[in-house]
Amino acid sequence: MPAADTMGGGPVSAPHAAPPAIELSGISKSFGPVQANKDIDLTVAKGSIHGIIGENGAGKSTLMSILYGFYKPDRGEIRVNGRAIQITDSMTAIRAGIGMVFQHFKLVRNFTVLENIILGAEDGPMLRPSLARARTRLRELAEEYELQVDPDEVIEELSVGHQQRVEILKALYRQADILILDEPTGVLTPAEADHLFRILRGLRDEGKTIILITHKLREIMEITDTVSVMRRGEMVASVTTAETSPEELAELMVGRKVLMEVDKQPAAPGETVLSVRDLRLVDDEGVERIRGISFDIREGEIVGIAGVSGNGQTQLLELLGGFPEKGATVGGEVVMNGHSLDLTGTKSDAATRRARGIGHVPEDRQDEGLIMDFAAWENVAFGYHHAPEYGRGVFMDRAAIRRDAEAKIERFDVRPPNPDLAARNFSGGNQQKIVVAREVERNPDLLLIGQPTRGVDIGAIEFIHKRIVELRDAGKAVLLVSVELDEIMSLSDRILVMFDGLIMGERQAATTTPGELGLLMAGVTDTENARDEDGIPPEHSHPVDRPDEATPRPEGGH
Image (cartoon, rainbow, N blue to C red; front, side, top):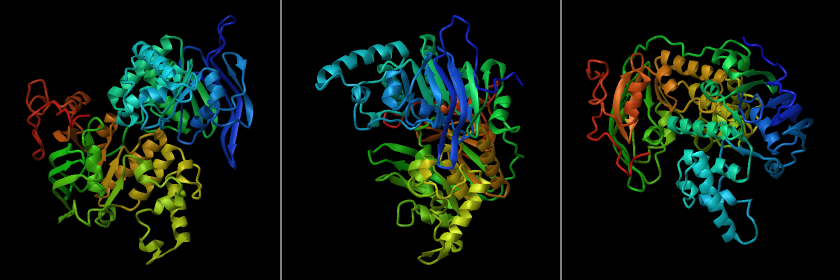
């Protein structure tokens, strides 16, 4: 283990060097009985990319929210560029040159890019001159930092990656020299994440200071100069990134050795649980999102679906889970345990799917997996509130539900372990644990799970992966959708690759490569994508789609 500054001080400046961009001394913050930050010391060098990592609930976002003025510390001192400052609100932080890009973007969705950029930063009562000046400045910033985006595009029409560019442009337009990014790649495709890293390196090379909050150790190792580790509200170490390793950082985060690879034996598939034939879905705008796909999932196996976000995986999970897109037209056949599922009628809802033995962890935990204003104990029961152990008829046994929730919260190490806390008051990773606990512990015959570890820390990733493998080893079937290729490859037994609503090919996880999957994800068909140096096309355990085209149609692409 490299020598670490356990006070979180980071590198020491030379006598005549510029002061650090950020110095935090003795920062503490409590919310009632929960101490989110305890005596935090942190130094961030000017013109560097500084990572902050820690488990969900470790206090990372709280600390950065204090720096940005969203919270006021109970005690402690903040220095910006060597000057002590009281940051009472976000406007004070902005005036001090601090900008923040939140995990969940703060954009007005029905406003244009330009309108969002100037919102709160208008030059005067007349908007037309402000818009004209902002358009000129926006063009300059976009060219300088590779942040091209149409200023007249409405936010809700932009991809997530382009929305993030708008957030960064907002901060730069307000002349931020210190930029905080909270889990910036949580909803980005790999290509978008790579582009973001190029942007961040460019900003650093221009003298900007970047603070990156993330749970992804690969990203920390790739992009940061220094990294600080938080655990249970305290700063436990700050190290130079080049002098550490993912394994050492994981141990610092969790306080124990962490298994970095999924530990599982080869699958022993049994009978077919789910059979999908010629499944199609056309959305309410007439775009064909799922284009006649067929596949099977058997007992005791995990089938992963790889692909860049936006290629039909989301619609597939939602359709199988019982809530297809509103106004969508569906065709094809889905058979579960020998019985056809209703895809369009009155029994096509999520409740009927659960009764058939299908559990569903949706991709978007906040919009589809939880009711954010309801307590954790209520969310643990949602969808299963008519279960016999929760009461009889219309009468629910609240005490029984609470006991069950408390047990699940303890087993899944949800933090803080408070069943009365509203879902919105948990970190994103702990929200995910609540949803996974609810669905996995129902022991479904088929688990549909989308982005299982999005926004989840390394310790929780290890735990969630173990539970998924345990479900498989108990003879259950799992359909996994993830944009994390490492996760797909390490957790799956078989891998299907989707592109533009089609299944481009199937691979055995144990023998495929990231490059091979990447070609399929880019739309290169099996007939073009040879398995080995001899040019022999891969074999398949059952027929899969053979698209006639290798490039997406304009209306169906991503």
